Length: 255
Image (tube, rainbow, N blue to C red; front, side, top):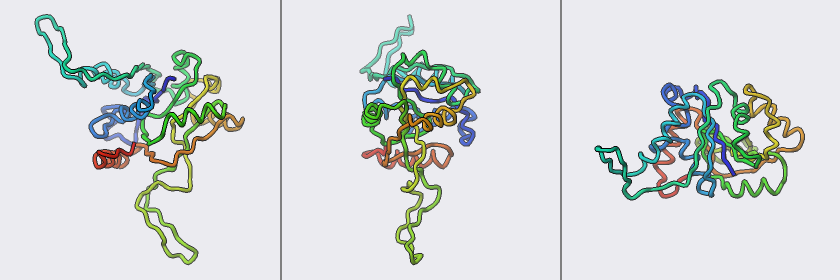
């Protein structure tokens, strides 16, 4: 089963970084958030990736073109340019890098990848959010319900401290910026049947508008409820939070 990662947006709310690099290449713990997302899938044996490129896509192409050399030690024979690797560390990833247009919307980018999916169910997520989600459980859930689409529902991170107040206006609980427990939002980490491509019209189609709205209206969209960790990287504050979580929890990573 192939995994599509949307990596073509402008990332305007992270302009401190994205003036030079695309949003999925912003680093957490010295690695692009794209690398972190791919490891979430790889942990469960999903190693065949399609990266939907757009804004500054050449930066992502260069990263993967040089990935093997940058992640291994090697010797170079300068007389003929031959390279021999020392104690190679190999990854099972197969990565297809596809330019889906600078101005394409999320749905349009997915539509352009139809021929690479081989008329099979596929995984899809955004290039800016990490989670403790169990991908195997997500896929099993999708297969069980038999509908065209599955969206992972997550609790949104709170932007302010959350108060729990009783009937007498006494604060019974205070948590600074937790994940809220009442609401659910689209957390990405989708699974779709190949018929989903028929719901996308063209490059200007937003994935989150007509395609998903129509699936839901027809009763063809099921939610996989994930109560665990999820965090998007929309702002510099989000990026700094993820950096802190990653570096301070080396023995028990949150994703």
